[in-house]
Length: 83
Image (spheres, rainbow, N blue to C red):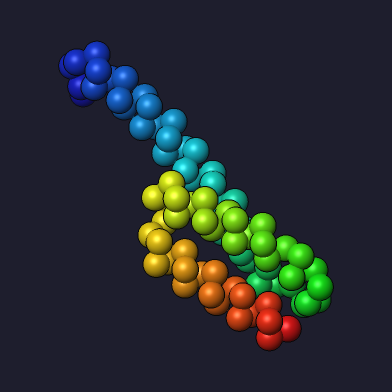
């Protein structure tokens, strides 16, 4: 257990950030699954920009790597175009 005040504060802050990051990551993964299960091209095309925005936000916050974000966006765009 930490003994310094600053270390205790850092533990509290990290826990808040971890929970926030988990929420963003999980909600993005759910949106990606929802997009992959769509069968109508118009709905998928309308939903794609919001999913891409979520992925970009994760990459900006260093929750996922930039290359992973690029790969996800590319694959999802290909998927929507092939519907």
